[in-house]
Each structure stands twice: as structure tokens, then as C-alpha cells.
Amino acid sequence: MPEACKFNIGDISIGLIPDMLEGFFDTPGSFDNFRAQGPADITLNIHFDQVPDVPVEEMIFDSGSGWRQYCSQARFVLWVRSSQRDPRLVGVFSKDFHSGDIFVGASEIDPGRFIFPLSYPLGELYMTNLLGTGFGVIFHSCGVIYQGFGLLFAGIGGAGKSTTAHLWQHQSGARVINDDRVMIRKTGGQFRMYGTPWHGLGGMSLAEDAPLKRIFILKHANSNQVLPLSPSQAVSALLARSFSPFWSTQGLNFTLQFLADLCQEVPCAELGFIPDNSAVDFVCNL
Image (tube, rainbow, N blue to C red):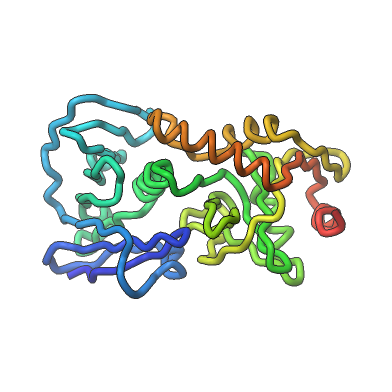
């Protein structure tokens, strides 16, 4: 049977408890860094090849690209489909997302292997909803730990996150914890930056964290330049580059307050950069 396992993502320990069944999880390699021991903060029950006919009362959100979220009998339902199977994954969760059941199908390549419950997009969607209950926010960003502190480089698609990640990968004393999705939480009175297992095309993902020192909004430019942003400008820029539960009034209110506090405490600036090593030197010298 797929073994019970735990993963620590953003200092939140999630335990997966599978049904009795022969087979194996088709676990993405990026999750290996996030395996954990000890008690779990959250436990999710995993069921195999028995996707139920979940009665739904209201569709909350339709991505138009492979997943939908519903409300069903005081629970939330995440419904993920693919070109080969609909549904591919179904998650049924409590209102606070602290417990739930995930129904997974067999791999479309090997029937003896089963889709990993926290694989993209369901895992990221689950985490987005959970964080929106008061834990933090995931940003569309590259995260770098340099000299013990976190640097967040946020950007929309094509802004240069992957380029930035590759440039910093070769900087002495720097570690790229993710090239596309980075979590920020406030713990112990400080904002901290965490790697996540949902990486971008560069495949960079580390289960490491550090105090957040600076935030940069990326844009391509003809020279390396930095423009400080006011807290209100920073909130607007980061909201557009966040993975937030926009379908939830409670989640969106938390996110807005979180961003307001974040941008009051952590300096945020627009970073125009040339895509070469001079950009790294420029940031190091700020």
C-alpha cells in the first residue's frame, strides 16, 4: 500500500493517511526535500480509485483551465480534471481546511501507481485555501536566501523570475529555494520566507526558510535600477503577484491585511534589471 507520510511545507506539517491498497504514490521528486517526521498539524485521508459522487450546492470558482471549487454541505470541494480523466483528483475539506479527504485516481501511465494527492494543482490549491484562513500567502516569485536573509523577487509571467533564479544559483553564499512559488508567513513576530515543492520550469525547490529582508518587483530594463515603493503601491503590486483565495471573502480580507502589515515592515521596491550577473552584483550592493 502507499505508505502514510508527512510533509512540512512552510512550517506546517501535513500527514497523508492512505486507504489499504497495493500500489505506490507517483510522488514528484520535489517533495522529497519536504518529508517530515513526528506528529502532523493537519491530517488528510487519502482514498484510491473510488471518487464519490459529491453533491454540490454552489460552484464558487471555475478556473476554466482544469479545476473548480464548490461548496457542499458546509464543506469545500476541489475538483481537478485532465484531458484523460474527469475528475482526476477530488478533495473534500472542512471549512477551515484543517481536515479532509482526497480521492485520487490511478496514474494514466501505470495503473499500479497513483496520482500524488498534493501534486499540482490540487496541492497548491489546498495550500492557498489553508493559508487564507490565517497562515500566510504564496507569491508568484523567486526566493533567494543570501547571507542568512530572504530576498523575494516577485513577478508576473515573463518578468524574469526564472532568469533571476539561474543568475543567483551561481552566486557564492546564495541558495534559490524556489524559482516560481514562495510562501511568506509571519511567525515569532517576524516575516519569514519559505520554499515550496511547487516549482517552475527551472525545477528549483528547497525546504528552507529565512527571515525576509527585502522584496523586489521584477521588470526588464536597459539598466539595473531600483525604485522604492510606498506601502500602498507595494500592496497593489504584490496582490497581483500572489496566489490568494480571491473566491473567499474571509481569505481575501486576511490576505489584504497580511499584505498591508508585510509592506509596512519589509522594504519593497521595483527592480529593473539586465539579465546578466551585473543584476546580482547590483542587488548585493544595495
